[in-house]
Length: 362
Image (cartoon, rainbow, N blue to C red; front, side, top):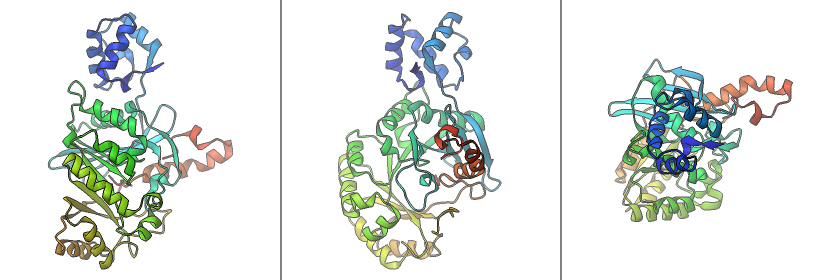
C-alpha cells in the first residue's frame, strides 16, 4: 500500500501513470489531499472505479483530535492528535498580529534527552511521515478555521533526527498546488546536530534556523543537553558560522532561562562572546514547569537580557502563549500518558501499542 499524501505531485503523476491513469488525474487528487479529505470516497469528481482503485492501492492517515485545549487568555489552541497507529503527537496554534502560526511535531517522542523538555521523558517511539506532518498543519487549519501563514518545527521530536522526512515535508508544504507556505514563513529548531546542520545548509533554503543553545559553556550544556557531550559548544558554533556563510541566513539562538543553572551574569558574558561578530539573535524563553523535572523558571530574565544588550547582542524574550493549557512541549501528551498508565499495567500492553498515551513550547 502506498502513502499517497507523502508523494510530491511529480511522484504522484508517475505513480498514477504506472496504474494506467492519465497524468491530469494527479493534480485533481493532489488538490483533494490538501483540502483535508479523510477518504478517497470524498474525491467526488473522480469516478467510482478510480476511487475504489485508489482505496485498494493507497492509504490516507488523517489524525483524530484526541484532546483540544483552548486558552482563555490569548486564544492559543493545543491539539493532541491521535495517529492511525494509536500514537499521539501535539500541535499548537498561536495567534499573532502578523498571522497564525502552527507549531508541529516531527517524531512521536524524542531521544535527545534535554532535561527541561517533557517530550523526551518517554524516549522516541518512531519518526512521523511527511503526510503526518502535513496533516498537523492542514487539520489544525480546518478544525480551528484559522488560516495558517507560518509554521514552526519546534514541537515533539528533533527535526534533523528525521532529516529526509522533514526535507520532503518542506517541499510539500511549499508547493503552490498544496498549502503554498513560503520558506521564509517556516522556522526549524534543532538541538544542534552539527552534521545535519551542514547538510541542511547545502539545500540553501530560505527558512529560519533556530538553534537550541540554552547554555554557553560545555559543563552546563552537557548537563542539561546530552547531545552536547558528543558535539561541544565550540564545534556547534563553528557549524553555525558555516551555516551563515553558506546560506546568508542569520540564526536564532533559543535560550531557556533556568533558575540557578544558566542565568548568571557570567553566562550572559560567555554567551555574548560566542556570538561576537556573527549575525543572529538570542530568544530568551521563560521556562515552563515540567512536573517530572526539578528545573525551575529563572527569576533573572530581565537582568540577563539587559546584560546581553550591553554587549550589543540582539535579544528578545519570547511571549508566553497558552500558559493555562499545557502549551509547552510534550506536556499534554505526558498528561494523557499518566492517565492511561494504570490501564497499560493492567493489560500488560506496551506503550507503543496502546499509543495515544505517548508523546515546545512552540
